[in-house]
Length: 264
Length: 343
Image (cartoon, rainbow over all chains, first blue to last red; front, side, top):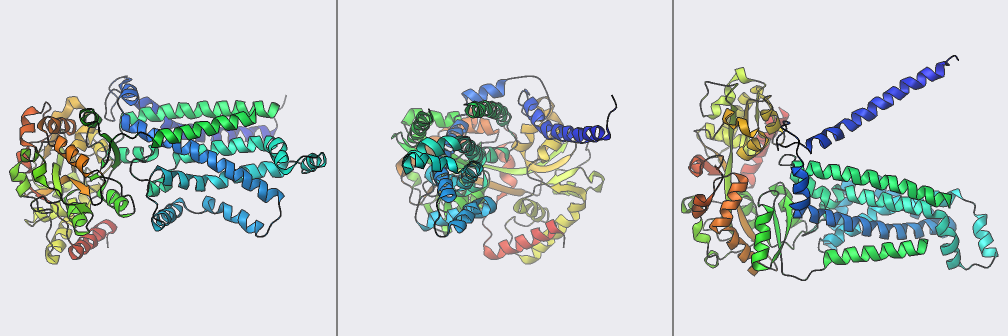
C-alpha cells in the first residue's frame, strides 16, 4: 500500500507536537525527581521520601493554607455556578433592556488583566470598610469565576433546540418546573464543567488573591510564593507532586462522570 | 439525582466555610517572614498557653508594609526590619511596647540593643534576630584574596561573581569600602559609591538575590554576596569547608528584625505573652539553631546545639540599615537605577 504525501506531513507535525509536549513535561519530571532527593540542595545525593513525611506530618501552616484554598475554591465555585447558570438562562431566554450590554459586561473580568481586578477589588473593599479576610478572597473569586461559568453554560444552552422548552410549556409546565426539570438537566454538562473550571481557577489564582487576602487567609499559591523566595524547599516539590496526582485523578474521574451523564 | 447532588454540594460548602471560620479559642494573628520561626516552636506556645497562633508569611518588608497599609489590619504582631520599624513608627502604625512587662527582655545583648538607631530605647520594637549579608568564596577555585570588598575588583574572576539585587546591600557595601556609613545621606559620597559599584559591575555576572546560591553550590559562581543561610542551605553539607564565608573588614550593612505590635491590635495581652515566650532562652536557642544564626539572646547562646554560620562578634563590624529619609532615599534610588539600567 502506497503512503500518500499527506501521511508524511502529518508525521512531521506529530513529531513537533510530541517534542513540544515532552519539552513541556520535562520540568514536571525534574520536579517529581527532586521531590525524592535526600538533600535539600540542588545536587542529587540519594533517594528518600522524607520530604513527603515532612509534608504530611510536619507542615501545619502549609495545610492550613491548603484548607483555605479548598474552602474558597469550593464555596466560590458553587456560588459562581448558581449565579452564572441563572444568568446564562436569563440572557439566553428572556428579552430585557440592556441585555446585550449585560452580556458584554460579564466578560469584563475575563478580559481585564488580573492585576487591575485585584487593585480595584482592594480599593473597593477598603472603600466600603470591609476588612480583608477569607471572606473578601471568597467574594473576589466568585467575581472572576462568574464569567467562565456563565460562558460555559451559555454555550450549552445555545446549542440545543428551543422547541423543547416550548414543548414543556405547551404541556403545562410552569416557569420553575421548566427550569428544574428541563433546562437544568439539559445544561448539566455545561454546569458541571463550569463548576470544575471555577474550582481550578480559584485554586491556582495568585494575583487577585494577593491583593485581597487578609489575616489568616493565606491560600496555597500565596504560601508557595513566599516559600520559594528563600529557595525551593523540597517539601514544596513533594506537595506539587501530590497536587499533580490529585489533578490527574480529578480530571480523569470528571471525564468519566461527564461520559456517564452524556450516556444517560 | 441532580437535586440530591446539589444539596450534598451545598451542605459540604456550608460545612467547609463553617469549619474554616469556627473555633472560638483564643487567637493571635502573627504576620512574619516565611521560614523564620520553626512551626513546632509556635505549636509549643499554643500548648503552653492555649492561644492559637494564626500565621501568615511574607517574603519582603515591602510586601508586609503594603498589606498593612492597604487594609490588611487585623494582625497583632509584625516583624519588620529596622528601616521599616522607623517608617512604621513615623506613620503611626505601631503600638508602643512596654518592655518592662516582658520578663525575658533582659536576655537581649545590651551591646546589640545599644546600637539600634531605628527605634532608640526600643519603645515600639523588641529585637528578634540580627544578621548580615557577607561574601562567600569557593576556596577550591579562588585564592590570594583578602577579606575585603576589594575582591569584587578582581577582573580575573570576571563572570564568576554576583552581588545581591538589593540597593541597600550593594550601595552599602560600596559606601563601607570607602569608609562611609551605610546610611550616608551626602550626595557626593553616594556618587562615589555609585562609581565603585560601576567599577565592580563588569566583573559581575549579575545582581541576583534569589538563585545565586544554587549556581554557587554547583560551582558556576565562585564569589557571591549574600546571606549565609541562603548559601549554606544549597551547599552540600559534606563540602562546607570549601566555602569561606566572611564579613569584609571594612564593615557591612546589617539588619535587625524586631517584633512590633500593630496599632489597634485586638490581642495585645496575647502579643506580649508571645513576644516574651520568644525571648525565653530555650525558645530563642531553638530559633537560632533552626536558622543557624548567632542569637542576640545572651543566655540562649549557651543552649544552642548547632554551630551557627558565624559568631555573634563577627557582626560587630556591621552597621544597621536605617530609614534614609525621603531625600537621601531618592539619591540612593537614582544611583541604583543608573547602575541597573546603565545610563
